[in-house]
Length: 210
Length: 49
Image (cartoon, rainbow over all chains, first blue to last red):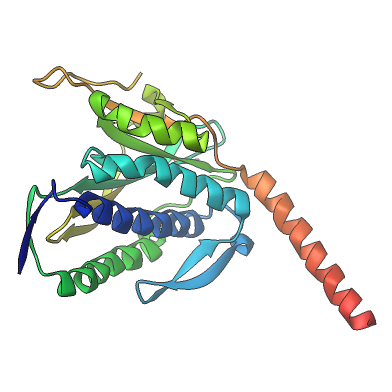
C-alpha cells in the first residue's frame, strides 16, 4: 500500500489523463445517444470493456480533443468543479445539461496494481448509464448543437492560458443563458467514489423542450 | 455574465466555454453524404477493374 498526496509528481497528471480519456468517451456517447449528430458518423468501439459509439468525423473529433486538452490542466490541479455537456436547441437555449461533478481527495491510500482496474470498473458503470439514459429523457428538438462548460475559479483560469494559445482554442466566460435553465428536471445517473476521484453525473432537462 | 459570488478569498467562481463552436449538424450531414458517395464511387471503380 502506497500513500500519495496530490503534491506528488505525476499524480495529478494520472488522474487528469484518466478523467479526460473517460470524458472523451462520454461526450461521444452523449452526442450519439441524444442524436445531436447523424448516427452514420458513429462507429462501434470497445472502451472499458463495453461497446461504445465514437464519432469518425475528423473536425468533431478534433473539437472534442481540443476542448479536453484545455480542461486537462484544470483537472490536474483539482480546479475543475464541474464539466458540463450542454445540448442546445436551434435558438442556442439549453435543453439538456449533462453535469459531471468532480472532486479529488487531498490524501490517498492507493495500491497501484488494483487502482486502474477498479477505476475502470467504476467508469464502465458510468458509460453503461449514459448508453441507456435516453429511456429516462424526453426527445430533443431537431437541429440541436452542443458545447462544453467548465466551472472553475478565476485564479485557476491562468492554468488554461498556455494551452489555449498553443491549441488556438480560446475560452470565454459563459453568458447567463448558457449556464442556467429554467425549472429543470433533475435526473441523477451515477455516482462514483474511488481512492483517486469522486464524480457524480446528473442530467438537467428543460421541462418544455419543443 | 456567469461569474458568481466571491469566495472568502475573493476568488470568484467562473463558468467558461470555448469561443469556437462545434461543427453544425448540417455540416456533418454534408460530410457524411460526401463520404458515402466517395465510398460508392470507390466500390464502382474496384468492380470495374
